[in-house]
Every structure is written in structure tokens, then in C-alpha cells.
Length: 122
Image (cartoon, rainbow, N blue to C red; front, side, top):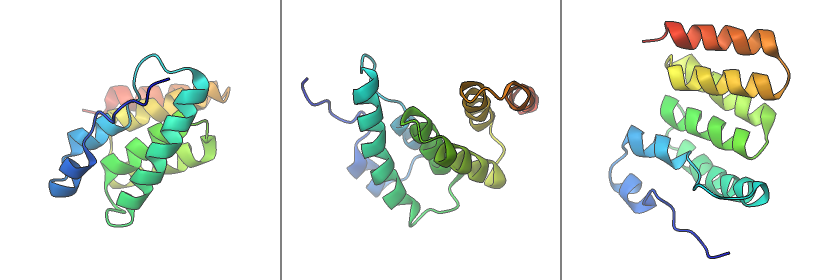
């Protein structure tokens, strides 16, 4: 399989931190099989964790890391990052990611609670 270029230019993020680009960094390319998806997510997690050293209170970065960890099937890390994100800023997207994670783990009541909170978030 040909190597795919990151849709987010890391140099651009280094020059100007844009939350919308950080969110896009958590979206993996379409058409990856599960093994490639996990591998790409783990590569992106390593990069994003480096950014976190300087931006430890960045809610969007934490949510992006949570999403990437879920895609890499790192359930505990995903939950921790998403909950940390919400501790700094309430976010519909982070709530939905937590709900989806709870669904994947068979925690229907928790998933419903997060979906309900997401619906209440403006």
C-alpha cells in the first residue's frame, strides 16, 4: 500500500496552532483496513503526545488524542483523554466520542448519559 500523506501539515500547526486543524488530525484517511487504521492512529498519537507536552490544557488536542486512541483500540487512554478534554471545556464532539466508546465497551447506560449530555451542549 502506498504511504499516504498526512492531511494536516504539521509544520503549519507548528507555525500557527489552529484548533480546527487539530480536530482534523484525529480523522484518519478513508479506506484503511483495521490493521492500517490502528497503525496510523498510533503514529498520530505519538506526534500528538509531543504537542501535548507544550499544550497540556488544550481541550481540542486532548479530545483529538481521545479519538485517535479509540481508533487504535486503546480504550483506557481514549477515555482518559476525552474526560481530560471535558474537564477543560465542555464539548459535544468529546461527549459523542465518549458515548461511542461506551457503546463499544458494552456500557449502554453510560453511552446514553453521554449522548444526552451531548444533546444538551451548545
